[in-house]
View (cartoon, protein in one colour):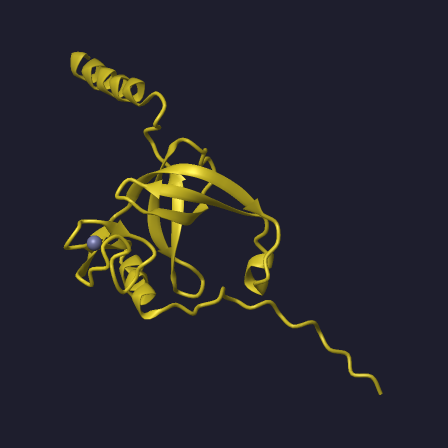
Length: 163
Ligand SMILES: [Zn+2]
């Protein structure tokens, strides 16, 4: 007699293992905040979180919560393969390297419209495992033509007042 078995269901969540320091980011992300460590001795902001400052090795690190952090998308790539079962159904995945204006560079999931060389806003969100992940969205005000965008906005306000 042959027993027919269905293929195993893909996992419902991505890998959830994070270190103790990563859990701090997760707790902040649950409140809609991006938590980054900042060195009290040299002022360096760092990501990913570590036990000591990556710049001066000081253990005097404090957490600073941000609603989001602006940055420049340095480059992007499309991932067509993953060894993690959970991610296979979402392929291709868009990820990119973002240089955060507070200092560090981070790998982020990219929302549609993120263009290398332009500004993005990075926030922390919870993934299906309930763990913090960084997500970049296009910034409303782009690096190129920023002054034009601001002056257009100013012109619209002035037009409103004139009417
Ligand atoms: Zn430091």
